[in-house]
Amino acid sequence: MELTKTINKLKWKLEFSKYKYWWHFFVGINSKTGEKKSFFIQYYAVNPKESSLNPKFTEPSYAMVRAGTWGEDKAQVSNFYGGDYFNVLDYKEKEIAIGHCIVCDNYLKGDVYLGSNSSKMHKEFMCQSGSFNWNLKKESRYANSLLNNHLNVALKIDEFDTKYSGYIKYNEEEYKVIPEECSGYEYKIYANASFDFWNKVTCLNLENQNGDRKSGSISVLNYCPVVFGKKLSDEVLVNLNLKNDNDKDLNFVYKKSSITKIQCIEKDDVIEFNLEAEDEKSKLEVKFIDKKDNMIRLCYKEIEEFQGSKGTLNSGKAKGFVKVFEKQEDKVVLKYNYLGKMCNLQYYKSK
Image 1: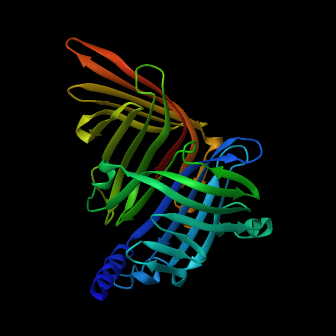
Image 2: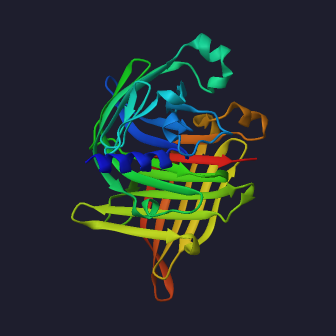
Image 3: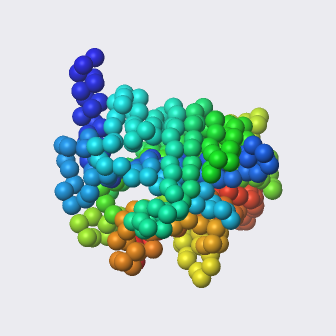
């Protein structure tokens, strides 16, 4: 028993010597009005005290909890902690505490707050004023097998479609999170590199306009790691899951060799994501778009703003479509036509 605990602790020390964060995205329903709204909660750590086996001496040691939402009243609120405020409460259950905020595979709870005066006086906080309070259980988690099996020299990522239950309060306005009505997902990142670009699309609200499979979800990750100042080859991972009440899920997996077109474009007022993929049996077309005014700009280092980086533009309200075509002898036929909404679209370019 003691040996197992020591091994688990050793694994975590090795993992946390790397940059890491745990991202949660979900939909809440306003308790008074019934309005649906997207939220995110992020637990983030850089060179915490727990990672003493391999500290990054060039990086500060700190932890952060950040929560946010999109729309006309969009906001992100971050609270920062010293590296010694990061603690692993249970190595086996992966239960982490940053200050008084806790997260693990089964639940997350906590709160963040920043007053308007502090927000104006301290630009280094890189956020707005406001408050978020949450208490959420993870009712079920379905692994994204493509991303969970992806590992290279620069990055390891674990992603799950997750059903949350509980509540989140934004400036004291309560939103209920109901598993049957509120889609959600989460992912953990372990990284040894910075990135030249990072584009991610996750939509769990696909509604079919054509065909027998009523709903679905899609996850796309496209990134280019930079290690020791050198750009490595870019990676593309696509996982499409189509659901039917009376049938097994239908999965389409497209890797880099299947991608015929992929681009994430920043225009004057919008971010637009386009993807086309093709294999022997099918063809895929994906497009999502959102106005930049709807998006949140996430920064992790204040100095980014002075180095030409614009941080990460992040949307929780992107809309678009996913079309699946079936190849039949000498023709290509539209098999499924999905409209997507409340998509989490992330766009980052270093320069």
